[in-house]
Image (cartoon, rainbow, N blue to C red; front, top):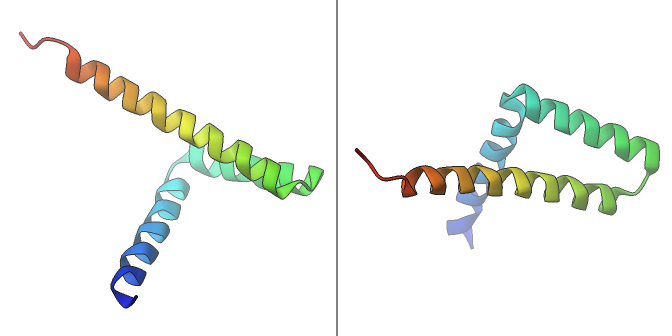
Amino acid sequence: MKNWLFPATLLGLSGLGLLFATERGRERVREFVDRLLEHGDPLGEFSKFVDEQLDAIQNALDSVAAALEQPQS
């Protein structure tokens, strides 16, 4: 059980660090917290936030895949 606890914690903390490292990430967190305080639907807002982040990741992966598929000269 102890073998996975440290890597999982490190991965989670590094993910949070990356989120706060960019202005876009900080803005998304601010928007999320503002919407959470205004509407009070934590699960729905969190789900929407996660969906937006997954869409951004998917778009980045699609861009990488497209770049890798281009023939090299």
